[in-house]
Length: 174
Ligand SMILES: Cc1cc2nc3c(=O)[nH]c(=O)nc-3n(C[C@H](O)[C@H](O)[C@H](O)COP(=O)(O)O)c2cc1C
Image (cartoon, rainbow, N blue to C red; front, side):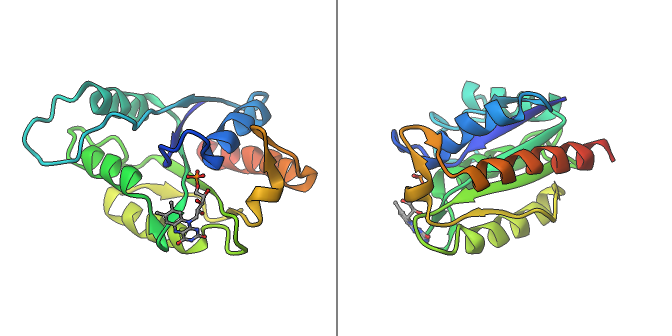
């Protein structure tokens, strides 16, 4: 199985990029996770739809078994960069996200662990016809203590992500 992982933060030191990198390793026994890059996708204006980064992302999503969003919570919602990439995908034909199994992994320094963003992303997924895994929800609170130097240093979080890979693989197989 092959999943596409989309990191919704463009920050150089993004904790979601760190989680993405470590998650890939954890998942490697169950499925491959290839990055779907969103950096470089221009702001959507509906005019020139030939952007190579966006076209590549659309192809990757179409050919993947599932999509995993590594998504930060910005102002209680989805980051602008991720929403912009989603808006691009939503105007592609055939629809990359239609019927695609998906899951969300989010981390935040506070306690809420991106919960508010996750329900917004699930709502966006209704129109896109994404098939989100309901449980487990992966909301990593206190992230600055659990993610250091590019690794998840909290054992229970690593274990939890391991169980997430198995649950998501089973969901995709269904
Ligand atoms: C523009 C902006 C808005 C943010 N809004 C929230 C928020 O609503 N809730 C929250 O828990 N953290 C919020 N944060 C803090 C982020 O959770 C934190 O910066 C985290 O590191 C973002 O993930 P990243 O490192 O992958 O970019 C915000 C950060 C930024 C830059």
